[in-house]
Amino acid sequence: MQSPGSKKNPWEDHYTVKARKEHFPARSVFKLQEIQQKVNLIQKGNRVLDLGCSPGSWLMLAATLTGPAGSVVGIDLKPVTVGLPSHVRVFIADMLALPDEISEAIGSQFHVVISDMAPSTTGNKSVDAARSFDLCQAALTTAQNRLLPGGAFVCKIFQGEDSDAFIHRVKSLFNRHRIFKPQSSRKASREIYIIGLNKR
Image (tube, rainbow, N blue to C red):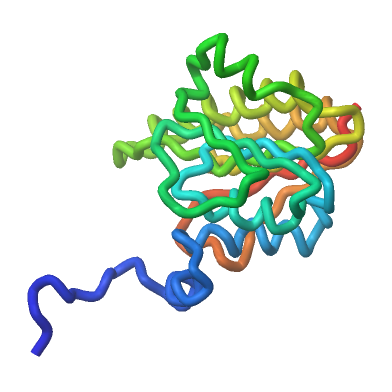
């Protein structure tokens, strides 16, 4: 008989189990892995900026892909508690109100900006989509200001009435773009990933 504390997580699936076996803190690592396989996003020696980086799965994969010759910078409201290599730095901050000293410390000249940011959900689809849109706009502005010419951008957005406007803005800033829903995204999720390649 199971004890009350051993109830199965209703959200657990084979990606959750696989992430645990491979020592990643979240199943979201496989979404970035699929994007990497699709467009060869991150290369050895790259400088990568990870927005909404907690609990750290994307940081860990990005650090492996860049290798020690590269560098990875993460920003999140929540701390990252997993062990990270020396070429990774994490800042605790609000992307919608980034303090000047942290903004300067993060720097620019990045090859890739990635964002898996999501708002705290309210259960109201229109409110949640609007909050997601605000975070996406902040991520894209960050990419516009901190990416090198030719750089790449990946951003999660919840499909809603604002998502088309966001896609149009990505198209205006990058020579190529793709809309991608990883197989590892939950079937019921309204999330998609917008990929911008070769920043103008």
